[in-house]
Length: 407
Picture 1 (cartoon, rainbow, N blue to C red):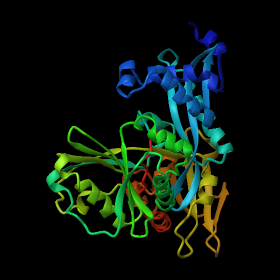
Picture 2 (cartoon, rainbow, N blue to C red):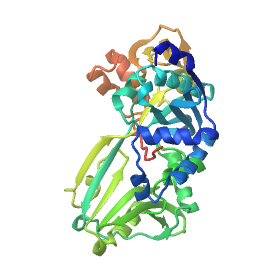
Picture 3 (cartoon, one colour):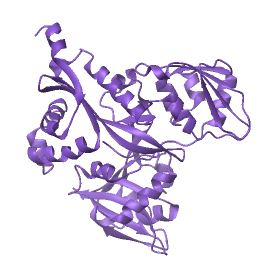
Picture 4 (cartoon, rainbow, N blue to C red):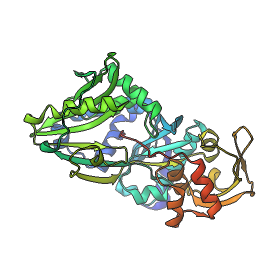
């Protein structure tokens, strides 16, 4: 197969539901999902194919085709994510895959560039994804913005009963009260994904038959927290623990501790970027941390104009010089200033202000609050003077992102 002939045959187009079988086949090949693994989850090939049809209906998916055969593909979900109290439109990238015979031809780079330009047209100024290969996505402009901490608590280390005014009730996975709690949580917690039907569908895709849901109700019978879990081989496994206040946290841990006689330990995931150990009387628990989600700014101008800067007093102007490997619109000089009312003014091509030079990856992780400007300068990811770093430290809110979803 000569390069010239292949180049003539390859065409990029948007996928439709008629491409579901090929879309699914490429995913299974790329991620080596076997029939045995599907069977262990209670799925078969036809069920998996049906499960992907809504994906192609609700996402924008693009692929390279060699004649009628798909060679490479990418999907983008229309989502929303909370950035320090402001809901941003976000493009959730998934389904990234290429058959090996078509690799090293730049197909995925062109698909990503096309998808990013499409996101920009849709005013999705942020993109997020779960990385299967972090170095690859860093080269394309994404950077780590959240962690997942896995903790193991022995049964003897479980918290003692804490008196609360409400109680826990077990519910089905379609509980409206659970959704109500998550809606409130996502509007108050930086980094959280707003879950509509599409997001909840992804949340339950592989686990709906295995998990249980417990909702905490306060003394006024208002739902203020929930727990998603299952028990297997004497282990209480927490998929997600969400609460709107400390009373709900104590109430849910009371419920977990009530399983003391049934289990040997509790294993859970924590997405707050804060260790669990400090909250427990016996803090000698096991905790492991690993990078979780990556993000990138798609459109710097639109992102900054929405950004909720922590402006208490008037600061000096900032002059950004940015490099982006895929989005030319983000490259070059930008001048950032604020008027007397604290409104953000961004000027393309401006060169006044304290100089800040970095790539789009560093810019993303900094404005997400995952890594602070002082740290980024220290590790030589941020080229800026002391005054510029001090300004950035003042105006970027302080809170670690919380992101517990997967797509």
